[in-house]
Length: 462
Ligand code: HEM
Image: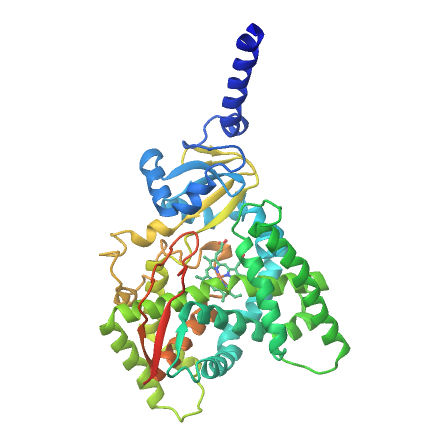
């Protein structure tokens, strides 16, 4: 009995506290930024995911703009200062490479974020030639126009969930660019599979039945053979389709011919990178326009003027798109205010000195750009939806605007994404009026911007 009191109970206490402090003991190193590492393995993931922006702000006021935490399965430093953020994004060569969570890497495979140096340069170059600004100007404008024109047909009199529709739009438009004429049955089945993968990319990597991560891995096991089958079908036929898959199968990038695995990874990269970013921006742009009728009126005038100059079936051109100045401003303001991208992630490949602190090798760095979106010096009255601010010279290219990232990883799909949202707005506002349907209009803003119960609107013809 005494032995229990003398030895077992203290041992249990020590073990209990050692477990609680395990992260601190395991990761402790001199000179690291202040902060708390939370519980073993889960760290502060729950607070990070459920109270995101408040959690970050709280930690910032306690520890400063560079602090440590432990989230999504690994120790992490969060950076909230715009200059430090930019420095991190501009200095991949100093050992600050993309470092997305294990869940993302395991679900998406060896995507572009996983490669560096010459291989990254080659893959990025290949992607730019497929979906970059020149491809948009030369090839993608009529394709996106054609899609939006027919996608936004026959909505008169309907009640739709705008979120569901913009998600479907964003997925289908990318898939059609990749494989031009696949049957609807393939599109539906691939979408259902891909959606499970997308959800699992931001989850704790716990591979047990019932978790999002488990479902995501199972979905990946299904998606890869579906894509392999597509490649086999293409090889067996002599037809040309002029789509991205044709290009990927035929092109040699700098003397490098892509093998099947690389083609599949490229497809997954294209499908994933431009999916939620475009759908959420589109949904939120329509939401902000609805909430700001005077801006909606001016947007309508911009698009009506373009429409007036055209025959009924005449395509929107690159020049028309470039003249949609207020629309571009609305999209940028939407991305800022809704914080569609809250931040990007890096991983250290060696011990790094940052603002006088040491960040150990192998740690994640969360370059949290969301707070800069509300910087009152850069954006006066930062909580007001004011697209006009983007028409001021230089704001889009300001060093602290990181809506599309910065440095060598800056978004290659920016123009394609902007075009999709712009043409959705074009056909939506020139064809329809809409009103929000009564009901739950809750919006979540972290880690994803989303309407958990959908965003239902009633549509009537203009
Ligand atoms: C309007 C919506 C979009 C937003 C807000 C957006 C935002 C971003 C951001 C912030 C990054 C930087 C990531 C980092 O530094 O780790 C990025 C990279 C990237 N984006 Fe976009 N993006 C959008 C649309 C698209 C589209 C339509 C595509 C088409 C495929 C695309 C493809 C990519 C790729 C491949 C990268 C990685 C580039 C690299 O690692 O070199 N994005 N995007």
